[in-house]
Length: 82
Image 1 (cartoon, one colour):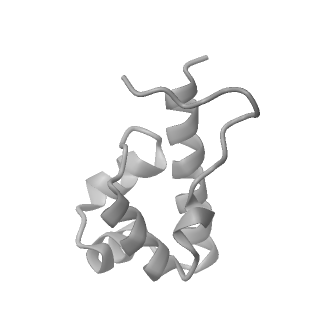
Image 2 (cartoon, rainbow, N blue to C red):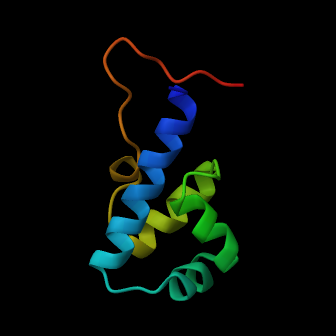
């Protein structure tokens, strides 16, 4: 498995879980974060690698710490850049 893709999929799943927990439709989250609905959809599907500023905006809207959005890699398996 590709560790980078797995990591982005986990990040996207966390964003989606928290968004749904807050009762926010994708459109509302995207509007409040200044992102397109398509971007949020692709982020939740693990197809986007958000910037730190995007993560900060999402965390603020979802009322969590930015670190709550970031899954930790498995022990001994660092996330590699392409």
